[in-house]
Length: 377
Image 1 (cartoon, rainbow, N blue to C red):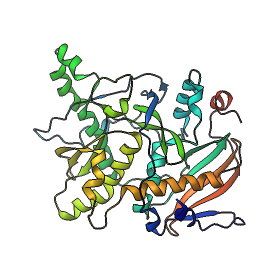
Image 2 (image 1 turned 90 degrees about the vertical axis):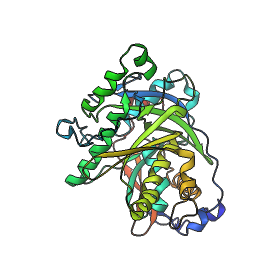
Image 3 (image 1 turned 30 degrees about the vertical axis):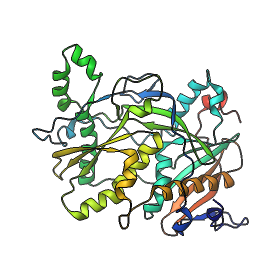
């Protein structure tokens, strides 16, 4: 990574440290080592957004019924929406790690702790260069904790965007069962369970989360990711290999739409699933009226090959090498320890640089319980 390190456009005397996205050639080298994610534990968010250390929100996949084609806008007026005005920080992840620490303290020697969304955001930046982002970081001991930066003003979606977002949640309800299919078949309940899915109320408070550890090159990472479902009963080891991501997309009825799907959607689908070790992405293709036309499975490991050698497409090694270098950059400049000391890590789309600046001492975003039991400053 010597060439990548030499690209840092920083000077020690400046308040803002800068890492240029360009040139891309420095990232077109063999992929850094990536360890298969290993699940440490899992937890659920119930309907009141309370953390439960159980599998109560783990759902089971069964293909949706698409004959006749369902409308993914059905029930939009009765959905239960999560209140995003409350900043949950990384409280759920920290609560899970606090619980795990009580009987496995040696697993907490990690360079970074953050949700998967933060890693995904870094992964896709080389090919989403127009999308700015910001995160906050704090260092306690040898570990850097990262969370999404609070938004200065909530970005309101248009009516169309809200509808398309809802179709993703509705698609999930049409793919999920509360119990394993073999159990429902044994009890004679499978047919009624399949029919009842269309009437399930979308509740975005409920989530099932997997907490896992992995390594990208020289950087060890503990992360958490929402998991949509699993293919069968959860095994005692390597459950990631049975998890499944559920996504929606507009129908690909023109060469232009296919190109945009491969360039942007498949990139994000791959990054999210690859980081968490999830092997399958199931995509429901719907039209602008929300009608579900077809469903297709994509193997995560095969997605980069689908776009390989196509003009203007993305490369997995560029994403991985860029992320590896950004983590190195963060380690280099997020150095002052203590839960009150925070840094801003941001990607500026205008300059196309990742920038790090010290925010100073602020109210810690690490919970008191976590600091008392795990990350003792």
